Picture (tube, helix red, strand yellow):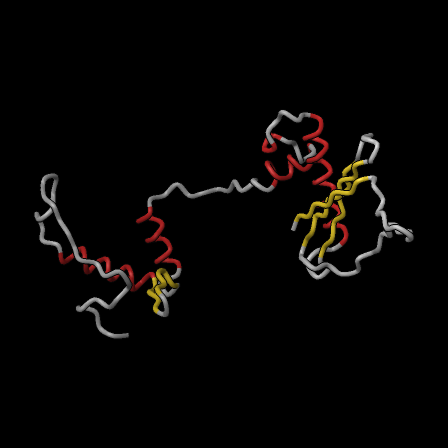
Length: 186
């Protein structure tokens, strides 16, 4: 949550009484995270100030995390004050080490990938672990061996010469892995 409060230099004027603003410490957060901005404008028109109080739920944030969030806000405000014509999206919030961490280390996902076709990868997996689950649909699953057998039955059912460069072929496929009429129950 974000709150904004405007305070002027004018004191509360109550005839016959004196009143003063007494700050108090809040010991519990009403929301998960609150940025409470207070703008101080002196009555004489002099330079004012803007303060921010950060409240956080200790069940969700530890002090160090809340302080890092506050530091991010400080960095953002400093960047915007230094270049008021620059769009907020162009403000630099990360230092060089953080930028390297986010852009290089978090994205360091390179890994060796076998340069094989899907049929070759499937055949290898079927040979290695024929009883491993290949397809899951809700509460049903099909192993690599079962899926391979189904694919062989479909391929065998196509008539030779029925497909080619100018021929069109279609095969009705159910939306979920059902038993083929030719398959026997397990």
